[in-house]
Image 1 (cartoon, helix red, strand yellow):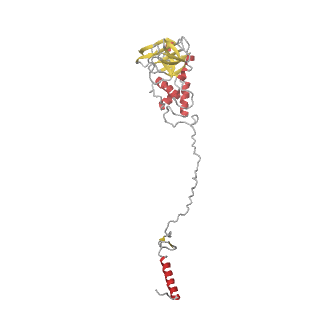
Image 2 (cartoon, helix red, strand yellow):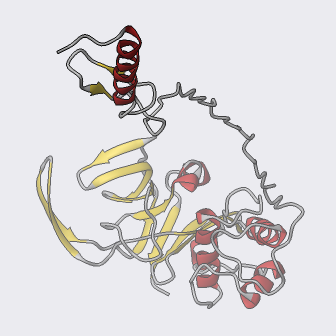
Length: 288
């Protein structure tokens, strides 16, 4: 091939250079040509840009409110009366209950301290009052019972033939009255023999019998201070009047006959009952 003139050679070289540059722009902007003639595609504007994410964790705000305390002012039994016409019973609190307690105490029943709180002691005293006055012995003080208690009717002797100082146990009414010098010193509810035959294993062998409180006139004799562990159970401050039959304190003095034969009285009364009777004084057990 004949050699080209110098000017022509320069034109040909420039055309080749332009062609090479044009082939390098076939990829994305800013691409480069490799030695093998292929292009490496750089990240595009659509590529994912990972930016540093700043996470701010706010400390939880805990608001502690002072607890609301509701103060309930207890009822003062000495100043607040139960509503008029409301039945008085166990759980009642107020001046009407206190008046009933005081009236019972004035008549020698033992309703406990006249504090306006109608509890078990008051209930048992009401049982005895209702029994002696021909009222239903339910322990509830309705209008009739309340009026009669507050009237403080005189209690007469049930066995006047025994003299001015004696003790009466009425099995029918489940009531005991202690008299001294013609005046009652104690009127209380009792629980006597259930009347049910029993047969029990005891420390001294089998003990069988009828749960009866024997009727008749007897005299108080021996007594035990504090608890006595008897074959058929525990007796508190027992005062005996017929063999193993005694007037004694018991944890349970229900509104019906329930003993093996003894005369159960409330524990609070058993604390002082022995001081009310002397050895040799008469006691009669009877049915009215």
